[in-house]
Length: 417
Image 1 (cartoon, rainbow, N blue to C red):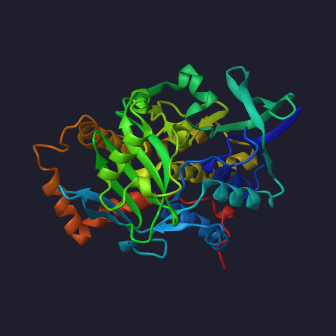
Image 2: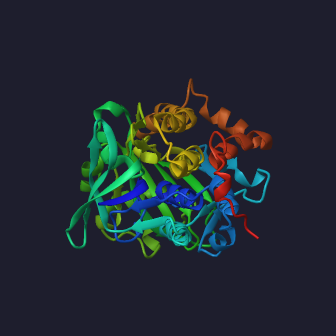
Image 3: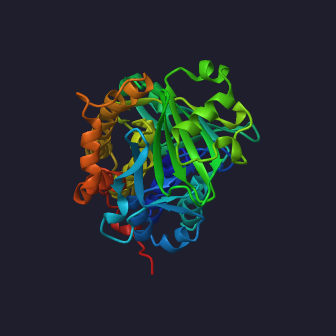
């Protein structure tokens, strides 16, 4: 029977960071990833300053810098009837050399982490391995059952601790004792691409259209576009036709002077527009004996603020710091996994609270055709925030680091240079 010390379910950012940190600390760890590669389009591609500093601490800064990427130094929103762009988050104003968000295809980041982790003798990555259920003995999770998606063969992997990093579709969420709490979301998201021209703005740009919002991520030669539409409106809006949507998108984006129709390649059919069913929820308990949930498996975030990946990576760093020594010594227990939730729960809950406020005060009113804000004051407040340079650092720091920085176990550190 196969056995490992720590079984990590899911090879996303949280799973790969946790696997690398634990392996460097001398823990035997096996990461199970159900796909055959990391190539997935329209995944979160933002690497925030906190993660950039982590990569530097791990000695990976130079290799990461060699990846194709675009740097976002500011977040801009349209204000007023003319759609003038104002900067609400000047990330470049923050101290330190990592005062930007790096836009890197997620598969490149995951390949970098995987290749580095494979250098550790205690690390194993198994692709095309789908976890189908947990092994249970006397109320404790003792590992997983899995299926090889290529051969169809099945097996069991015993583990001292299993960590669920497999996102909002995690098997762990079906365990009733963990208590999933769901929050209403007013929107879904359409993802698509548009070519970018030299005269376009740079960075991350937001716009407002007729009952929808957009976020456009500067990827160098193209824009990664997100259109926030009312929850459940996908079928009805698609029935109105793609040309109508693209025309309204161009109208809401005044700096696209010639309109979307003059930019190629552009979406030619609805197959080029992908739907993200937005959900926001949180487990009341992230653990049970032998099991820990982190990242989206523990708390699925709204795309508002674009910090879901940042939170997942910080979860992994905190988990590695709390668990590396007891896993290595064979003393890991329920108190250790509880400590991870105690550390990370306030940040996850606080971020979701801010996202819910943004849903209620900004996004939902705009999607319903109403003015956002309180008592008709959103424009005045936003102008104050965007015209005072020292006030810009507040939202910039939140975007860059969240509520604070987690530090990895000392045994994992190998500084660049």
